[in-house]
Image 1 (cartoon, protein in one colour):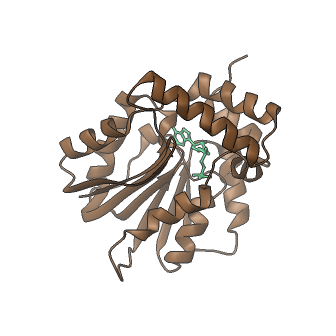
Image 2 (tube, rainbow, N blue to C red):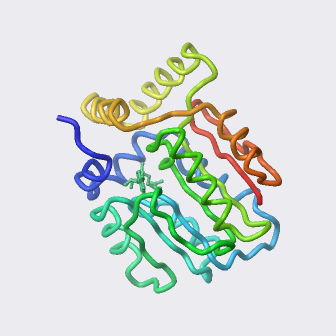
Length: 226
Ligand SMILES: C[S@@+](CC[C@H](N)C(=O)[O-])C[C@H]1O[C@@H](n2cnc3c(N)ncnc32)[C@H](O)[C@@H]1O
């Protein structure tokens, strides 16, 4: 039976962090790279984490920018509750249970918008709408960066990515059952897109600087400055 993205993450919420650490190779390094290229000494005041899940990236934001006003947004109420529970002592975080398509923050609102392994859950036409909204709600010179799974310029490269990912996930401790669950989820809900597609669309939206900062197999960190 096929379930929605929201129900998938609701059901997974309590086990999510352990499972993702066994599934994504060089996960911490990937998240670390989201912070490496930010301007020296920059202190973004308002930050949005899109698809925060249990708060793995939110935790890294807090390490780098403990005084910022952080907005953590996710579709799944259960996973967002895990995030709230994790940071219950921290009053700088505001939570939003919302679909990406319903983003309604004011123009020029955020200094920094980040996301990790979340945007691939929406089809390309919705990604484009999301990037338009992100451009609108970022302040001038604001930065949008995301780490995510990507496709491959050919089917051959993409299939190689998947087989290398499988080998890496098993090395990290994933079981066949874990792998089957992610593959079922992937078939039902994931929309992997080529790196070049993201770069071209972001450039076309008039982001001033667009680049890919890091890549490992199918995981990439993409940067866009308004
Ligand atoms: C793989 S998790 C990543 C969580 C976290 N960023 C991390 O790195 O561990 C993807 C998250 O994106 C959320 N998500 C998927 N589609 C979404 C949408 N359309 N709107 C908002 N959140 C969404 C899911 O509920 C899930 O919590």
